[in-house]
Amino acid sequence: MRPTIGTRLHRFIFEQEQQHPGASGELSLLLSQLGLAGKRIARALSRAGLMDILGTTGEVNVQGEVQQKLDAIANEIFLDSFAFGQLVPVVVTEEMEAPARLAENRGKYVVFLDPLDGSSNLDVAGAVGSIFSVRMLHGDRGYQEGEPILQRVSSEQVAAGYFLYGHNTVLVYSCGEGTHGFTLDPGIGEFLLSNPFLQIPKRGAYYAANEGTIEQWEDGARAAIRHLQQPDAATGRPYSTRYSGCLVADFHRILLKGGIYLYPATRKAPLGKLRLLYECAPLALLAERAGGKASTGRERILDLVPQEHHQRVPLLIGSEEDVAQAESFYRE
Image (cartoon, rainbow, N blue to C red; front, side, top):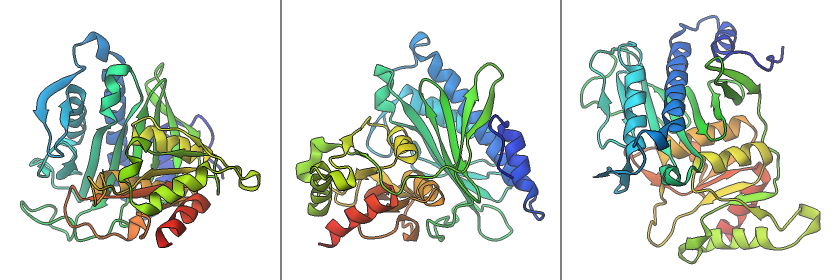
């Protein structure tokens, strides 16, 4: 039976759980904790201009990027949401060099987070987002201090998703079959189902890329963009460009409308700029479960084996045919 539009997130999670008789309910509770964090961040963002929480902290994070005040606030909100829940003993976030150990928890999950993607948009009231990826810890002992948590390949995520904060707040996630979208109703403080079983069109009409650095790109990426800019009525080209500086916002458009998002390797960042574990891999999971494709240009994102927590990779993601076409330019 197709889910009913307007179903509350908690009920939807429960109904999905009922389809798996062996489910313990722990992952459902974890997803509810993530939903609470998203609502708290949305509330903070709605009042940001009135509370002196815009601008920078004066600190530089582990990525070498100037930290915004709301980056730090969002990071703390997520950590607080997992505290005392006995589900998540360790969290890896963009804002912290080492994994955050939640000593009071003995659970079996590790969460990877980009707490606030696109935070450079905050000062101009642009869209921002949060990205999450949930994985299982190894063995039955839970997390042990100093234990490596990177043995598994990127495909082995039990759940992934994102929040998009704009004129409304959207949650998109997958933890099994399909990719599902929810919209926050601020009147009742609940996420309501708005887009069950999302499907990316096989080919789109948009591309998103930071073309200001195009002369630094590798040849395959430049050729792919120039192909999209050439008129061809049979395939709907030229494509229109849409780029906001927020990965979540740009991917959300591609998810709904089709097309391709590119952040290729450059001379300045030869390994790529986006992080594998908490940006590329979770969005790749959502894309594939919605019928799309995600690649470095040469390899499937979900086939990559992580080497370190903040590993960077190139990303091509979106409609299956558009990504496959871009990969062909890399091969050539």
